Length: 111
Length: 111
Image 1 (cartoon, rainbow over the protein chains, first blue to last red):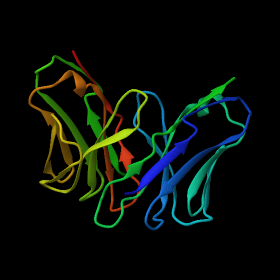
Image 2: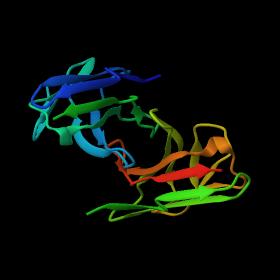
Image 3: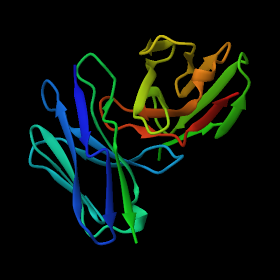
Image 4: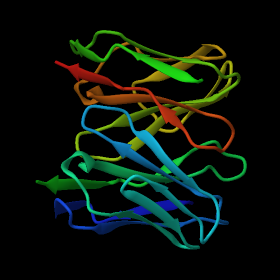
């Protein structure tokens, strides 16, 4: 069964202090990976899709990268408004339509 | 463009009362539809998913049921709510095995 593990569970940064969030997965055949941002009391907001190892996507201060076993969400010079929970998920395997989500990393950026 | 509507945003219901949460999607046809529940500080728990009208897959045996009476309508129901049904309920849609898009969620408190 596909499994997605995110680390750390929580991360506290100072404004401008760059860092990375990790999403590792055990799946039978890489089918891509999704990143989401979730603010308190809101539904997850889609950020990126990565389909193949070596692929990178960027959006403002966020850059997502993908290897055969894990994905990183790099946050460069974060601002307080980047505070949120970041979730990753893998697409369903053949014969299933179930997305498999990690439990998320709660990021807090202090001013 | 595609949009997803989920209502109500908040709901307080007494134990033993019925529940009906509705989700509709616009701008796409034959989407996959999902109901998730998120407990405070926890990950996303898949409750039900549907790949077509009248086709419902249940992931967790419980006090809830789902129905898909129309192509872009997904309903989460309960005949008698339990205290343990409290949580944050999220509807989502996807096309095939691409990324999923979420509604804004319903905060359900059973008292």
